[in-house]
Length: 592
Image (spheres, rainbow, N blue to C red):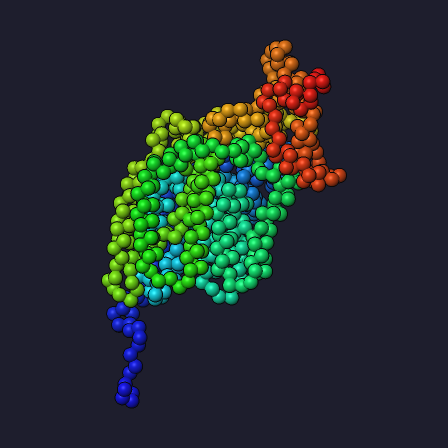
């Protein structure tokens, strides 16, 4: 080589390539943000707050009023399954009241926070997928065009629009998943940054919803796998992940005297109901022909894995954590029989399953242009055409028909409440003015203007709107058991619509609260006998212990006592018939 002769670069960059790549970061940012922005717009078009969300909002109101995380004042029952969501709503509601003379209603805060969380979750998952794709290429700095195909699937499936608001924790679930995979992707990239914030974040999963522990566990395993330190450090990370869920579990046992939320007891979440669960899965998958995009994306992913050189196997293991968790989560949902809300419980499962393919690189070999991947083009064409059809036309067969409840008891929940309220976007309590449950709650609030120490007691099946409208001076007995300690523990005698299989008889309410079950007429001898039997049962065995555990002040060792009895009070069941319950709990010799 002659002196002064320029040395050739091993990776030449022609001037035209450098010029065309100047806008690449902006173009890629727009590619990755577009699906999330589309979901935000579609979610806003379908904004609403569900009946069940008003259960959470009543709990939040009681927290802000100093009564604790309870549904009825003076009765410690965990009527919610989403502690972190309730905590966030409480913080948002408290801040709104502190800093504004005319704060937004809690309903709007819940809808807005859910929409922000859904949008952020999809964006974070898409960015994480893009970073993983970039790291898998031989030239990470230039991954080429990215197709957000997995993100497009999320945007096309209309239940994601419905539950982006809804006032429920679905948006928070997506935000947690997206943030976890984003943090895990950074951890898999190596470096000396601390891993404990990632472990703490992963540990929040069961506090978003208990079933998300099935997603948190594979995530934690992946985090430990990509941590290049010793066993002691890994044990420390596992302890950090478990710290907050363990602390809340101690609180749950001592405060509520239960191992699981009251809703899980009422729905018998530990019992298997595979047939109904399979119906729930098919109700979701067939309505949107999900087999088509999932097959196309799985085919691309398998071919890409077979042909792409990867930097290390641990990063690949980390990418598989969420799909494995998504399959486990879906399996659990099927096992317990699904839910009565169409698709809702499976949305996190599908989201987690799509994480590795949220962003698909179109270029097959970096450094060669046009080195377009034919499998990516095929998958992109299939998913795009399917997404157009899905977004415009695919809906469950009972959508828009009657009240939107299908033959299996599964409901298009938003459609039902739009019809029920007569409002296209029922968000606030005022938007439900035409709904009978809200009107009944208003009437109860007026009746509850009683001296201190007295209360109005009402027994109903739908407790959200009515309970929120009625206010804290009305004790709402939930016949179905989501918010009632006795109804939740009735023995399950028949299977029916998920979450609607137990029903508390009036005699139990009359016996507990001293009201007549037939206020307009003298009760029959049979009713008097059953009320008497219920009163006796309330004074016997674990049922008496349960009432002490949820009603006695938390003084004099009550919290510690609840820790001891929580397991037994969670598993104990009683007969729905008061006479049978009395015989079981008190023994025939003590009948009164």
